[in-house]
Length: 118
Image 1 (cartoon, one colour):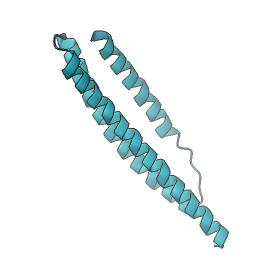
Image 2 (cartoon, rainbow, N blue to C red):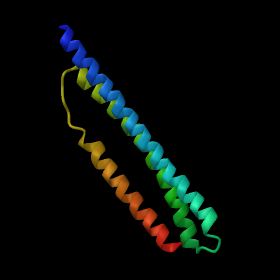
Image 3 (cartoon, rainbow, N blue to C red):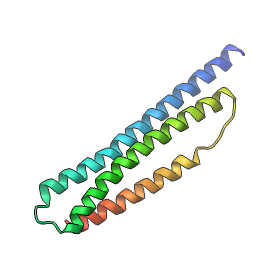
Image 4 (cartoon, helix red, strand yellow):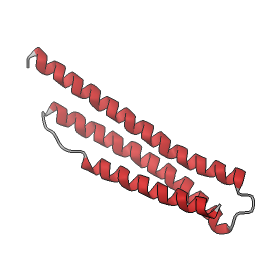
């Protein structure tokens, strides 16, 4: 393998690491949405209905769960991409894109529903 090929692999591995760290930041933001929902609920909703209280708990737990699932998915994706780089293969990462689209839509629906009942 020539020096140019080695440099290409190094750049691809570094890009893979940056992508992984971006997914970790995304997971942290998802967990943050859960904490935000809990904080808003505790501070703003003294006389909220039982449904509103349950919804706040659901948003918080779902955000935490989705954040953890994002970390797991990002880690699996990182190692698959690492292997693909080493084997000079390209595989589109459409699954994680579909996953994140569903996650964002679910969170927007849950938070919007919660805010409608506050």
